[in-house]
Image 1: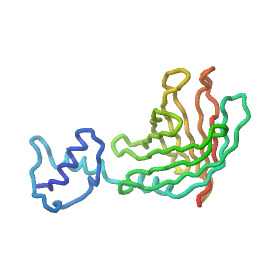
Image 2: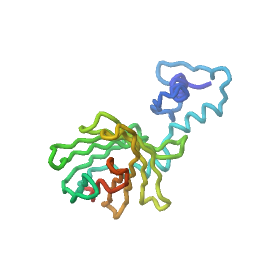
Image 3: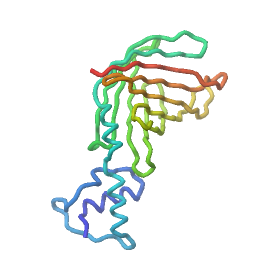
Image 4: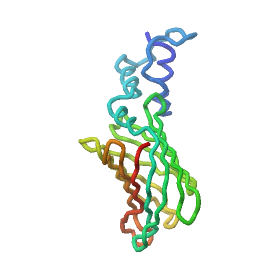
Length: 210
């Protein structure tokens, strides 16, 4: 017998709604009785759903990035132009019981005005990879990506896809985050020049944690 609360959560997982809200809870919820497994379900099926929603070692490592980070930025509009300096602040919080990191970036787009960006980072226990989405106040589309952590835990390599406003086609971007010290890290963004298709460095940021 399993609790009604656990059953509902497992059904959310199987329905693909990505609503893993506390899947690792145990015991019957207040005001809910016991219910049996659906036809064809096994205890192993239920356990698989519980494990899919339970934070683990990768989530603990991911959560170490929580805090407020001040950044010194350089951005390139094209490979042949000089970089434009600016500053930013990244506020990173652990959310959903340690399952995800939410980060908000507050900065300045050189020559264009205030820049605001937000994203979510997680580790998918099923696909065994880091996942992320990102959006900002200069676009109406999402950047969606997956990441891989180096064996020493210091470098995260991301691959993102986003629509290019010039080519009107999806383009692939690379991000590299490198831990350089106890309270410092670097961020590098690479992507294709929409006119030539050749990859170049779009942005670099040196972050220091408050």
